[in-house]
Image (cartoon, helix red, strand yellow):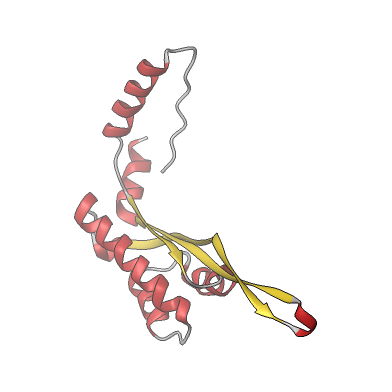
Length: 148
């Protein structure tokens, strides 16, 4: 939940203090979970991540449960963590949660050597991913928009 607050020539310390005060008073209706350095290619994981965007959490769990891909198991764990963060840290209702966004970024690559003929070698790149899942509460989001 990014909020744009203008600095307007304020000193940095005063600006950060005011920004923190404003953020503390704002309602919280989203939670996030990130799994870093996961040993799966981002290209393989993105197809699964795109299949759950915008779905209710229960529906997303069902999709991930019955998907035969390795990425589904990994993303399911991150989704579980995001839901737990929403319920325990922010007090949101689990029935109202939906997957706001789910994306997979590139991580570092492990480079390995594969011997080839005549003394040459090929480089094998074993890719890693950073998986991010953000869940939002529909009811709290509506209430926050109505207050504005």
